[in-house]
Every structure is written in C-alpha cells, then in structure tokens.
Image (cartoon, rainbow, N blue to C red; front, side):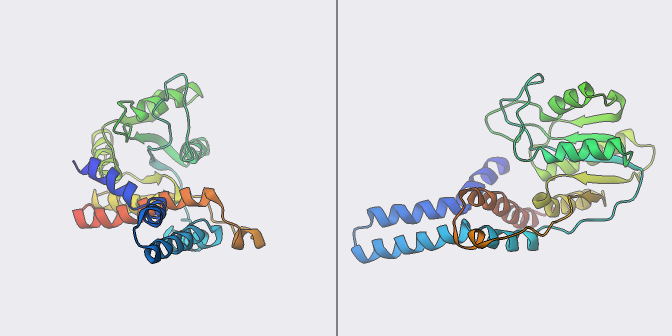
Length: 250
C-alpha cells in the first residue's frame, strides 16, 4: 500500500501537475476574474519551473557535496532505477540514471570496490522485471566475474534497498564491519545515505563532482522544457525524504 501511495503522491506533487491544474481552472472557471487569476499563476509557475538557473541553485542546495573516498571498499551498492520496464537480458533500455551503472563499473575496474551489490526489483506497478538480475547479466557479459556480483531483487524503494542490502551483507560478510559505498544518482544520495544509516550501514557514497556550468542570457530568460522534468525528479526526492522521515525510515 505504501508503494502505491508513494507513486500517487509523487505524481500529484510535481510542478507540471499544478501548472496543468491551474490552466484547467483558467479554462473552465465560471467567473472571468478567476480565470485570469488562475492563468497568471500558471504562467508564473511555468516560468519558474522551466528556468534552468533557478533549478541549478535549488538542486545544488539539496545535493550532497562530493565525498573523498577511501580505498578497497568491500562492497559497492548499486541502487536500481536506471532501466526501462521493457528491458530484457539481451535488450537493456537505459534511462537518464544510467550513470549509476557507469560509475559502478569505474569503481570496480579501478579496484575501489571489491564486490558489487545490485539492489532493486522493477520499482513499477506494471512490471515484474528483476532489474538486479538483468544488470547482473550485463556486467557478466562485459567481463565482471559472477563471484564479484551479488543481487537482491525484492526491493521496490530506497528503504527496502537499504534493509535488504544490509541483510545480504550480513549473510556474505565474515565480519559486521564491511566497508560499503552507495552508488546512485546525485539527487538521490541524501535519502539513500539516511536510509542505509538507519539500516545499520554507515556507508560512504559516490557522486560526480559538481562543475560550475557556464550560463548565458538564454538560461536566465528562455524557458526550457527539459528543466520541468528535472524538477519532477528533484521534488520526488525532497518529498520522499520527508515522507520517509515521517514513516521512521530515516
């Protein structure tokens, strides 16, 4: 039930939903002055949430800074959420979170992590695909030993990622002090770190160093539709963090 409610809440809290709702009110409201009021408010929200500079300021406030890494982590924990639900073992369709997998491969190849834990089922109401198993098959095909890949394919959210990964480490580790590093997207790290700490894994995390992006006049005054969808992911994380705190998951 929590999984379903979280998906619904995620939808109704995104900026696009409220912009669309205001425009609908502007179109169907019986009173003329209210139609104008709703329309202006919709335009204001649209300008704010399609401005890349405003998004950059807010997102960098939310995201954690790059962390200096140690060496020889026992486990790199790769969190799911990077493949399309239509993916198959021989045809993987990656989404915009594919950097998680690339970073994992990099850390493994540079011997920063000894073993990889892939955590995640489908994370969708409409698919029974095991993301962890699909990604394990892919890693084996590019030369990573099966002995160095562990999977848990039950989790459907970040909280379960942490709980089930902790159980897996306890099962396979010879000690209770395994060094772990969480590998996920930058906007998702804050919630992930808190969940894993709650699960008893005080883990480090990996993120790409933030770069100062060059901004010209277009970034300040010209709306960009792609930013609207970036806000969707960020708002999902911020609201998700608060819900997890309320549920006692953090």
